[in-house]
Length: 349
Image 1: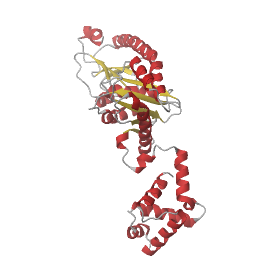
Image 2: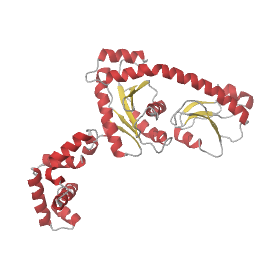
Image 3: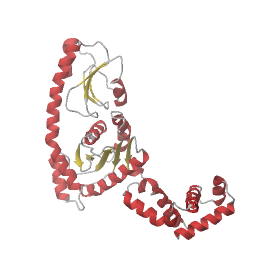
Image 4: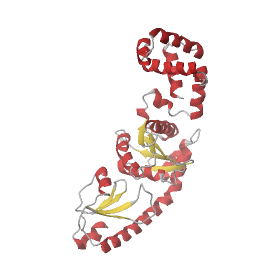
């Protein structure tokens, strides 16, 4: 369509780009444009860019983009943009018709005991293979209503950048977007999504954008468990970059802090309160002092000498405080499991 539209002008290089830099279409004379460079070029002063008027979000808006400033008369560009807008309208209509089917797939997965046969049938109805492997991706924004702000659109746009395989995306209550990607054993979705995700965030820099990816799942029977993994990974992403953009795969949850990020807040608070016991009594200055000593002690590999140096104390004072901590918490700081208990409790505060 672009080639025909610009044929009478000598078919200058022209792109149809999304806000995140994905090339939807380009004329035959236009060289391939990497997503990062394409996103930057949309804001260049020496080019011509015209946003296609359609019901789109900041993440998936289309832009007619010519690298040159005077490649076509403005009136012609607007006429071409109107034709592209009609095409976009039909495209969005087809997407809307498929949305309920996609939501059904995600709803079937998100049950305590998913019906594998029902999930397989739903995948086939969406055009996905019922043979794996699969990867589940969960995304949220910092907004209370993810649908209103296009969280599902952001995820769809990101996956369109990085996936040659088919995928379905559904929306869950609370604005969470969930995708199932049918991929292969050589899948590199986490790495590629990590590169593209900041480009989507740049479309709305004031809105945090977080994604979590499950491990590869060989068959539909594992999709429910993969959804749990992806949610844990998304919680880890929120911990890493609470006010920015972050996509984290479950394989990256390699620390105690990232693992605990997926635990519900009320459970974290209960565990911390129970384990740290009277050390959390903010009304007593001595307990606050002991809590600080415990944090520094664990951070310095349980070395009394280095803890004393860091806190500018005599080493005997540190020994005394560690004894008090052990008495108040019922933990023995010479034991690895008790050290981990207290470290986890500090991270859960």
